[in-house]
Amino acid sequence: MAEVLHVLSGAAIPFGPNGAARSAITTKRMLTGPIVVTRVGIEGDEQGNKKTHGGPDQALHQYPIDHYAAWRSELPDFAPHLTAPGAFGENLSTRGMTEATVCVGDIYRCGTARVQVTKTRHPCWRLNVRFGVARMSHRVQESGRIGWYLRILEEGSLGAGDPMVLEHRPHPDWPLSRLIRALFADPLNYPLLEELGALPELAGSAKDVVIKRLATRTLEDWRTRMETPG
Image 1: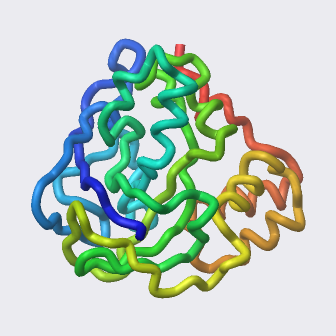
Image 2: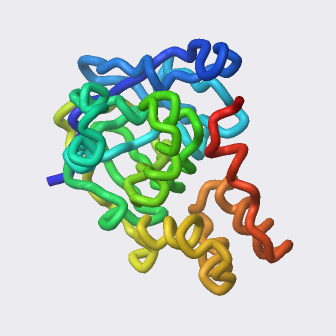
């Protein structure tokens, strides 16, 4: 059974080289009791860069605890970061769901809330700083253990122990692993991009990426997103 293990939130603080940026990736804390979720997420949960994080299409970030064992094995020197949920800045730490089993547009009932899968994370340089690994953003992206975002279709409350009950799967041929292939592993596969861009449930920010690639027939520069600012 897929279930929520923990619900987390955090405040944005100065982050990165010289504290020039802001992020809540290091401040996520586990919340107790039923937690109210609204169209824009959990009250008090903050994003350091609202241009690329947060908003209705990215109200909650979900990350599988199922991936933590692999990360501890691959990064034994950084295992202290991986002893508790929240290492990847997630709001929902879950068991029993991965990018291979979750599809774009999936609708889940969790507690009294109803949520929908909109896109995967686009790993950024904040992961490099968080883990102290220069190319952690690249490692996360290449691993496919990325996590994903949810929009809130029905506001309500959810908490640790609540099952994630699949109510509707409009695109069973679009598991998130295929989306990851289209966006990151085979990023100039134009027929695949056209199919992805036609999914109405896809988050607007991901759709914008697809539209631009199809229009320009080029890949956007990932360095600003993935490389730690000097």
